[in-house]
Length: 261
Image (cartoon, rainbow, N blue to C red):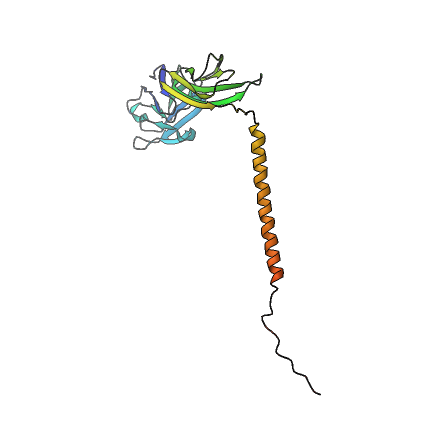
């Protein structure tokens, strides 16, 4: 089995895992099985498996997680290379290719060391917000992901604000503490594969000496009161008009004449 020790892929894209082999058969036209495992050889979880019954048949897939795996090589031509599409962080693993010839229980071969799939990713801002801290001050918080781990920089009316940084896996968070200046705050994430940024706006509410909150409240209540008076006035007008003009009988009775018995 011939495989590289490591392959590098980028999150969100596809990657090819090369695997070729040699075997003692000069000609082989019986059933042949191609298998890919993860984590460990021989006992690892099978993520892809296909079977070809003869040299004229395609390799029929029997195991393929979410259809993201595609056989690039032709097992009949000693090639088991595999493509993984739409890479995500969970694809980071060690992969082992295996070929099985039918007819002999010992006629099976597998890579022992496997291929380490290492993922890289351009930075991506996954969260940016302004939150209240334990000290009741407002803090700006930015979380980004990427590989290598991005560097985060806050830009804006900082005025020497203190910062704190924490990271786990491929994510990093930088917090800008004790916001005191209004304006636009931008978080910039960079690594060797790219750059990303996110923006948050911070404005403190400033009540004037005339207590604008109470003024707005009184204005709102006054509008509601005026609307209520208008509704009541319309109702009273309609009622008065109805009483002043009682309905007339659409079918007046014929003039009555005295009846002599």
